[in-house]
Image 1 (cartoon, helix red, strand yellow):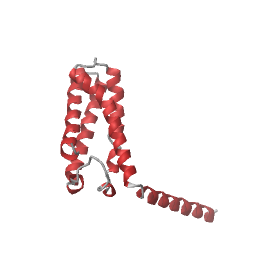
Image 2: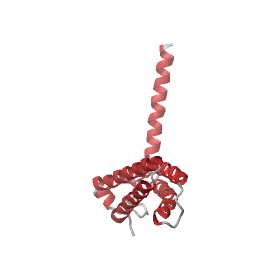
Image 3: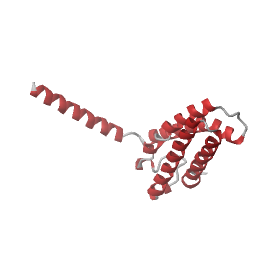
Image 4: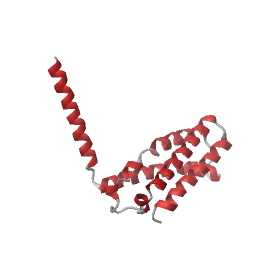
Length: 151
């Protein structure tokens, strides 16, 4: 019984090791496409919220709640796609991402914090708080685009 358990543990550990190696060997172009796909989806779900802030889209609490939740999930996804291996790959990312990693990480954290506040405001149902939070998310997005994205 112990031999079977030990063998199963070894096989599981080896499988996990091989999976980690396989993930670490993802082509840089694939990582770039994945992070860009996430950014496109962030734009899709933030666009209606920005429209509500500007007044060009009617305020809809259900859409705000749904889109804020989607943005919360999406905002966690693109960052591992900025691996060092993608440094020379064709993208809009500026080299400063890799030379000023702490500043880039801070921008990511600001976005995550702003989206967290948007989520909380959406759950509160307070339209004024939601609109202020939408503006903060827009500023966080803009900050990253201004400093880390080719124009």
